[in-house]
Length: 355
Image (cartoon, helix red, strand yellow):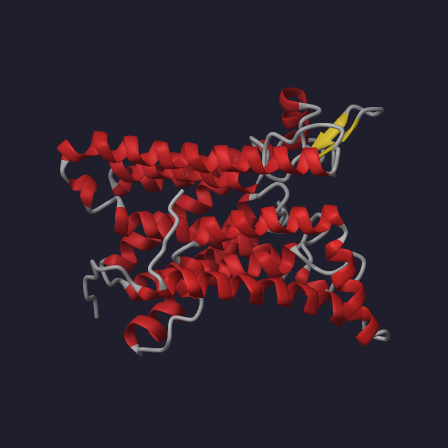
């Protein structure tokens, strides 16, 4: 049965919030040498639960645009103002990411400033997909999605290697942006950035998939969404032997696989929260998502650079001397709990920071 939905749904805020909380958890262990394997990204090819977090966030960003932008863009007269507001927000997110990296560069006396990053990628994806949501029809959006996936797949499949440093994604980023990358070796002149330019094609495809899934959710087409999830999972598995899952490169197989899982998560959250009335756990993180991520990142940088983070981990480790991984996890969990209190207080006071 299809039941059109137009109002804001708690499941979207809840799922966005859970991804932000998960980001804080996996990005802030007590000690990077003692982390449970599922809480680490795959070293190169492969897929762990942690590899779902960022694509799920971008997917939900796309879903949100299906509810916030697409309905208002039906009126052609509203599109210029919507586009300006969208691009201004994307620019603010971009500037926030740039300033965050200035702080990291200054606190840790890094050899070079990093141009690309998580917030910069979010800004790019929001701008591109938002403009598509405002100015194009659904058929065009599907065409852009498959064009991105097929074009990017052709580029990667035609490469001599997908090995670290030597793959075409890293080579393009190095040629354009060295040494301002996540990793750069001045001796070999090789570099890599997991949020670089070329791999953003895959990230944009993930966000666009969220927009299209959000349109179907808004129309109440749950059966079609379930079928799409299964189709994407199957396609991802079929493509993986030729083009492995790889978050660093954001490969098309990774887009398909993570996209199928993201749709499944969206459907589950919608059924439990919107249809069955379960509590929207994570909503408070979700309604202050970018602010919580940015604020927690600044706090983490200051704590780490001052030595307070290491002292906090050492205290937990002294209580659990035979379980360093558990101590490391509790350190991260404590950080998440602190920020849960922050967003809870903000929500109670109806304070919502919009970047």
